[in-house]
Image 1 (cartoon, one colour):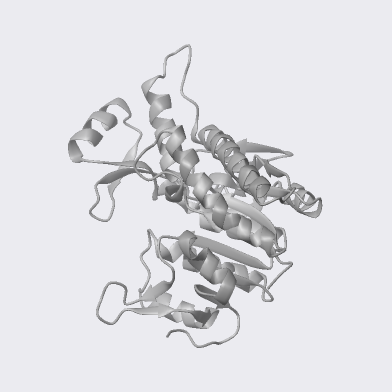
Image 2: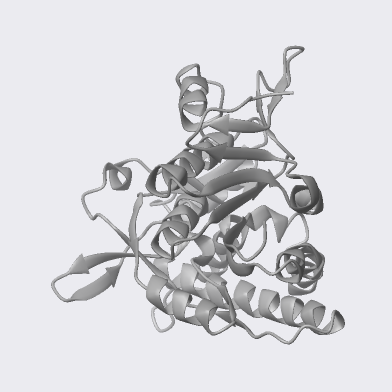
Length: 321
């Protein structure tokens, strides 16, 4: 399993847990880098993408709190670009340090990445993508009084979060540049935060008020660069059916058809595992020779050594253990 082109999609919550300080997020990424360099050690070409839900939400709140007529807040697309820069900066440094510690000479570069969406996507009429921290009812009453255009929803009993439109990605503008970097032996960090959402207007691109799901954006990037493998990292080592019940079963190697059957049975939560499963299906559908993997960051070593995780392919396979 060497010499492959691999896209690894990190979750925004893997970078920011409870401490939103720059120092805490940098510490988290230094630990993340220790796992990611394992792919380089085995001879793979690596492309890293990442989420930004907590980070972009915090930036938007800071922007709103400090907005004045002379210094107005920036729109969501620009806030996404900001997080691409900040998280990319931290991750570049973390990867470079870990590579140097292992005696590996490679460059790491962040690509400010634009992802095309359809301006007529129905998602613009129904905001669903959670961003930022959790709030109680009193807190959102204060925030909404100051920002009446904001939408909030209750999130799995954990409190309330702001939601924004989440259209599906159509294309990745900088996919060619990412491939050039890979071919030059550089590790690119791309499609951060799902990419900067843009729509085509004539010969130009115009940013829009949305946040693209990072799993779908990572899939589109993996598809466009011709990746051999898309690895989507989440909080658990495997995808499960009958999750958190006595009948819980982990899925190991599974086909697209089997996963689609589980989706039809309502096995995966819309706000958590479902988009990861759908992105995995989409990737192997467009790249039948490829594989999609869903596992956790802490399980990456086991995946590299023995294939531990949920591996999705077009062929039928034993789906659980």
